[in-house]
Length: 139
Image (cartoon, rainbow, N blue to C red; front, top):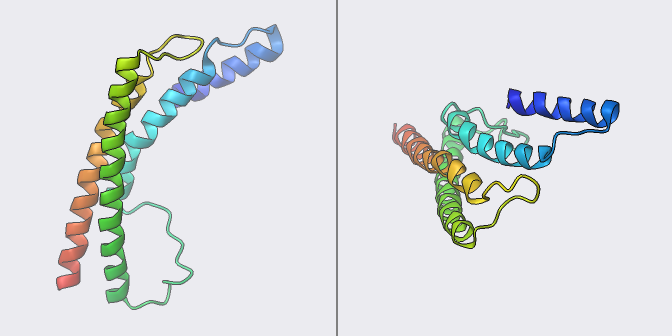
């Protein structure tokens, strides 16, 4: 991500100072950010570092919060599995179609399959967090 930020800064400076932006900077940023989201999401979820709004649950009893977290983890595992499945199916379609980015000609399927391991790991982490909450609920 630091490289993407540096590239974006160089492209903006190049565009304004020399009328010469980096070709395909939008494409690179789009692909890199998509992959980065799935690369960091499992770690974030495993450490319970997602943004949570506790407006309604702030004063809730710990047992009820745990039950709510258990249900949330199960729902998140299902959604993560669905996203993983669709990334695979979409990547296969893009691979078969041979679609590429407009300026650089980077195959679109690279973005799908680069994000897929992170999405699969997110699914596994969601199941593990669900199990962890389920055990806490049973105590």
